[in-house]
Structures are given as structure tokens and as C-alpha cells.
Image (cartoon, rainbow, N blue to C red):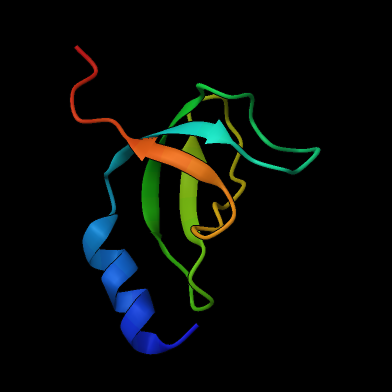
Length: 73
């Protein structure tokens, strides 16, 4: 992924952004509806997430499905 796309992801999903997993095709993925906090974007464009269930599996933006959580209250 080129640097411009990575910078776009960093602006769209800054560290601290809360997200909810919708679907991820990985045997080690958290279950759907798991919430997590973005910790950054790595050099290949994956979104690094600390999931509330303790998982640290990254999101692949063009493959995995997720949404930003605006208000958890």
C-alpha cells in the first residue's frame, strides 16, 4: 500500500478510535460485535487494534468488515 493511502487510513482511524468488528475471515479472529480500540496503522496499511477481549489481531481494511462506534452510551 502506498504512503498516501496509509496516511488516509491514519486520518480516518486515528489512535483511540473505537470500532466494532462485523466480520473477519481468520480462525483467530474475535467474534462479531467485539469492540476494540485502534492503536495505529502499520507500514502495510493494516489497522492495529487492541480488542476488548484481549486479542491484538489487526484489521485489513479492504478485507475485514467493521464500523466506527460513535457513542457507546
